[in-house]
Image (cartoon, rainbow over all chains, first blue to last red; front, side, top):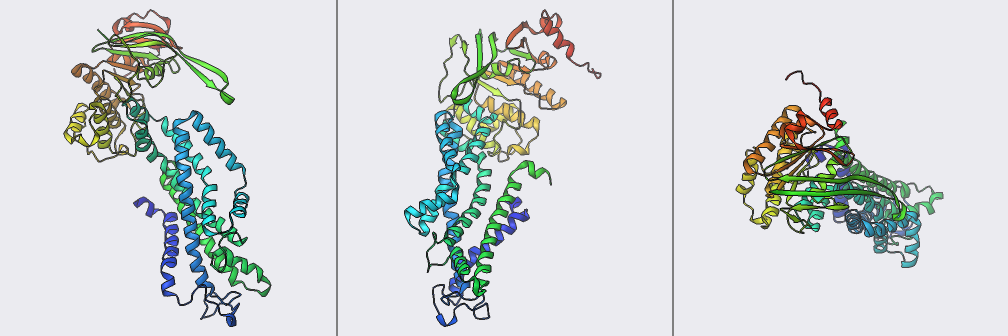
Length: 275
Length: 258
């Protein structure tokens, strides 16, 4: 844990994420504007002292909407990665540990899943189920587990062959105990890394879906659908509708990628030695 | 009386190709016979690929022989589930033989519990200490992790884990190859001590005939999955009958310090 905080990448990533979490939790109590409050007479105002990030086409405060959007983005990130972990990790463990038929079936499913371009798969499913924030979380989660499964399987295969697993087998320890006590803790490092990176890409996927109008539906705010507005009014030179939500997306995704990369450095002994 | 007897053991590794087709096979063992008497140290020597490690793994039931049988205490062994194996292995690589995520105390607690069939919670600390005493590590902290120990200490911990299971036979697969010379001697001495004090027979595997001759009472020389020579250790070292054995003995570098 100490090593984690000493790593500058992890530390700066965590600071940004904590900042967004704090803002999304407490800002609604502190900040005076509501993200849904319309004020037509103040529509499309550029940033000023009253509206720090300007207003949108209905005179809603952009800063309030970006803040409210961070809630949605973060929860989409965490929930969909949670779903992916719940599916991907057990399947990878089963495939790597039991091998044979289970391995073949699971890995073929993974191959099939990886053949689809993810974003089109998501678009298709959303088109069937209808756009809503819960569907977005579900679909992103349900399409992002195959990579995790591959990681976990590969790691399980290599840990399986270590001598301490063979020793546990010779001790007559039950299989499920070997799996959970001896194998799982040794496969968790790459899982944590790819989960951190996955949060970033899930946030990105949600923004894309909302931008395309298939994610969070207005009037509910999301970074993606604020950007859509910016696109529509781009001829009015409304740069603040693009820059602020865009920066927010960029910062969170960069933050999670920093955490992921930093964790990789900390958890991978080969990279640690280089320093 | 023989603790363990192996009769005509063969092992075929089949390489699986696309969709389960057979694309080739390797004959690792081609009919090996051996015996381990009570209190004996059997040394197995051979170059890499001679099948000595495969034999060790078969003795520990980590591999099943393609044909042939293992006879424990004059009974054919079929393997019992949920019970510690009568043979326990000490591995070559001290870094891979201990689970890096478990404390030493927990690892030994698990081993003692598997050996005595008592639940893990009921294992007391002095039982663990007693196991550690066997390998001269009674002073260590039980909450430390494997990476905090040196190679020699790790190998001792591996031996302690094997002993915690009260094995009928200790199988040491190149236990000193990964250690430096001074530590090698200590570990060899420890294995010899365990053998003489506890009367546990040992199968000792090495590629270095000098190391094997220092410790074994009988020697089995292997090449390409076959037994080249088998007999009393002193006889084989002093008057080897097979040409291959002579080559192995000649290959030992002359130690300028001896």
